[in-house]
Length: 133
Image (cartoon, rainbow, N blue to C red; front, top):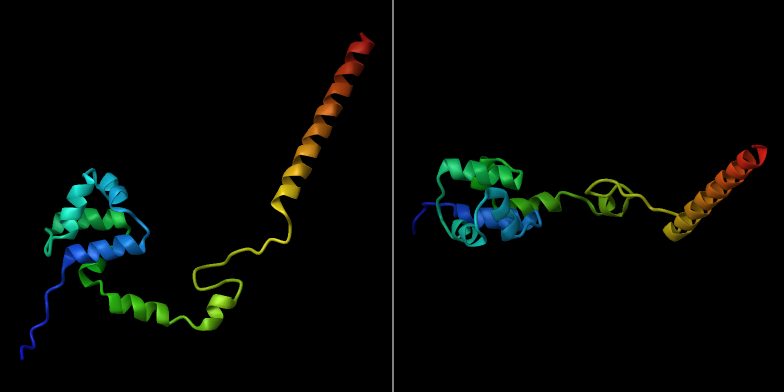
């Protein structure tokens, strides 16, 4: 039995990180100035030269080292570190979100009514100006 570790498949790591970021191959290709097929070929490559890896890392918003050292287990462990309470609080594990207590349509109607009222006041003011002359 060999104790040698299997080398990292850099292309597969790029693919996983791209997917985690919710990015399609076409979007990454556009950011890199390549075709979608080129990105597919890169993701199929076990090794990628450092200069190209740095460019890809910038497009993905991570460091080249993060791509090299990426592991699915690390991501799973990262998400398992959040306790259940963090997901149920108003701030949550991924930042705060607001719970609105009003209907947005009501706010649009209110704004529209205020705009109509302002226009009516303008018309009245202009009518007064013309009557004075």
